[in-house]
Structure formats: structure tokens, C-alpha cells
View 1 (cartoon, helix red, strand yellow):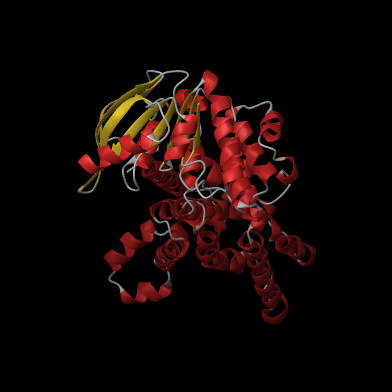
View 2 (cartoon, rainbow over the protein chains, first blue to last red):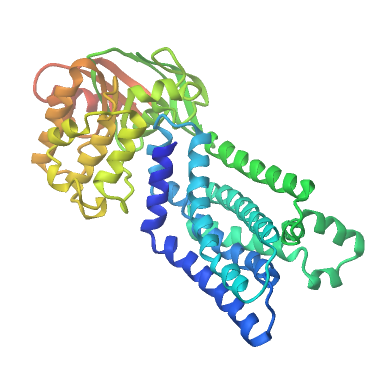
Length: 233
Length: 227
């Protein structure tokens, strides 16, 4: 598994998307934070945690679109699938390498709470729990995007479909939708919304229901990707 | 060590392989011959477990290559059709990955054997077709496989490079099973000890290579015409 993880990581970092998209993500969030602090006058991390999911639904499909799609297009999947590696190992190594890049990306944004800590008082556990929430949301988005990537041999199709679905999922909990739909429909949609579950983490609460929600969906899409590779049609 | 028994493979309504059965033992150098679209690549993919047969059984070392892939595949070296390679990687990076997965400890011997020292630090994308083919072969040879499956190993190579690959196949075959597919009849005459001829998914001939110059061509044309 280590060998494949290293290879995957190397391939992500060899591509321009691998380093430019995470840096752009961190710079954009940094810019929003500076604007909030120095123009609006708000010294809080809440806006950062609320805006991040709206960028992740683009960032994550962009990073993961080539992961399996490109292997299928270039047929390197045939080499990979005829090496003594289980399908679980292949998917897990790909997921872990992408998660490493996302963790580095989120790590780059740590400068935001550090700067904020210099000019105001921060409650550190709340920030840690918020970052754990973002990491869980990212892993869920990665697991989903990897599954979409396994269904297509065209990386643009993989990116578009993944980003579109993640956009719709992100908007499930938006005020805009809440005003349009009946209350019962809203409640059902809200329960399925990862943003609602992320909100608990942003508030500094480790809610077991939200934790289970993320873990179950991550495992579900991981297993679906493994099943897709096992089809051998 | 390789056993295919009444294997069928369908893609939708298209029957790619039909009632294919054969066995191969150590020392066999099998030339797998057939026109384009005859089912050679599908058969190779069925042997490696990349494809699941619609019907029938494929066994390598008496095991199913799909369900027992972790025990079977370390003993199989495979060069797929068109030699797919990660072009964005260095030769060294790619072969390091393969050697780690296949537990090959002496990659330097393979590099030397294939005369790849000068390209070892180069990006795969920058290599000539011949050297790319050598990278694919080096990957297939890692882990000292007992079975070597080469799908059109000399495709697109110049005559000198074709000779290098042909001599290598002869050398490698002593302790292994080598199956190589081709539609170049002279390659079969030069290298193979046994011939399999396939057309429209069905096996037309399985036997020792016919003796005499041009005899493979005569046999091949006769069988294809008949089918």
C-alpha cells in the first residue's frame, strides 16, 4: 500500500492542479479573512469555516477527477489491476494520497487562526473541532468524487458531475432553498446535508450523530468505488 | 500452470471469446496468433484476471486469478496491449513502484539486461517508442514471474528493436511460460515453440509450431480462410 500511496502522491504533485489549486484555495480564504478582519472589523473564524465548504466542492473534484478516470482513459488501470494489489488497497491508497493533499491545504490555512490569535482571544478546542469537521467533510467529498471518477473515463465528465452534485448537496442547507420548499421537505433535505452536520463541528460540538453520518457515507462511497473496480466487465 | 476451460466472454451481444480451452506448462513459448479483433487481447485479459469470464474457468497454478489475485499475480508478468504507462513519471519512479509492489530486489539486473541505464532518470513521456516498450517489459519482468504474458510486445518497433525483444523472449522462456500475441507471422517462426491460432473468438489451432520456413503463414491463411 505504501508504494501505491507514494506513487499516487507523486503523480498528484507532478500535475499543475496538484499544487496550484490548494495554494489558490488557501490564498482565497486568507484574502476573505483579511477582508473580514480589516474591512468588516469581524475577528472570528466562523466565516472561514462557513465559506470553506463552498470552495471544497470545486477543489476536491478538481483534485480527484483524474484519479481513476485518467487511469481508465490511458488504460494504466490494466497495469494497476494486474499487480498483486487488492481493490481495497488501490482505492484506499488513492483516497489517502488525496487526503494528504487536502490536509496540507487545510494546514496552509492555519495561518488564519494564528494571526487571529495574535489580535484576539481564541478558544483553541473549538478551532480544533472545526478543523476536524472540515477534514471529515473533505474526506466525504473525496470519497464521493473518487467514486464518480471510477464511473467515467473522461476526467472532465468526472469533474463536472462530481462538482454539480456536491454543489447541490452544499445548497441543501442554504437559506435560499429553505424559503422555497415546504417545511417537511426541508427537514428531510437538511438531515442529508453535510453542511448541517459540519455546523455542529464549527460550533465546537463533537456530535456522535454527525460523526457517524460522515463515517458511514465515507465508507459507503469507498465500498461503492471498490465494487466498481471489482466489476471487471 | 495455465488452464482455460470452456471460456466464453461476452461484451453485450458481442461474443469476444467462445469456448476457449487450452493448457500451458513451464518451458512453453506460445505464439498467440490471430487477425485484429480475433480475441487475443481479451484472452490475455482473462488470463490475468483483468476481465471476468462470462462462462468457463481460468486457472493459474490451480487458482482463480480474480479471487486469489494476491497469491497468483506476484507470479505473473504482464505487458498489456499498447503498453500503457504513466507518462508523467520518471522511469526510475515507475520502476521503483513496481519493484516495491512485486518485491523485486535486483531491478539493476533487469535495467542492464534491457540496456536502459541511459534512460533510467528520464521522464517516460520523453522516451522513444522502443524504450517505452522496454520500460513496460522491465515492469513485467519484475518479481521473476513464472508466467509472462506479452500482448504484441514488438508492435511499432523497428527491426533492430524487434530482434532485441525476440531474443529476450527466447532467453526468458527457459524457466517460464511465455505467451506472446502477435499478428507478425515471422515472429512466431523465430521465437515460438507452440502456436495458438484464434479467429472470431474461437481457437482454430493449438499445437507445436509447424516446421519449415513459411509453414506458419500457410497454416494461418488456410485456417483463417476456412473460418
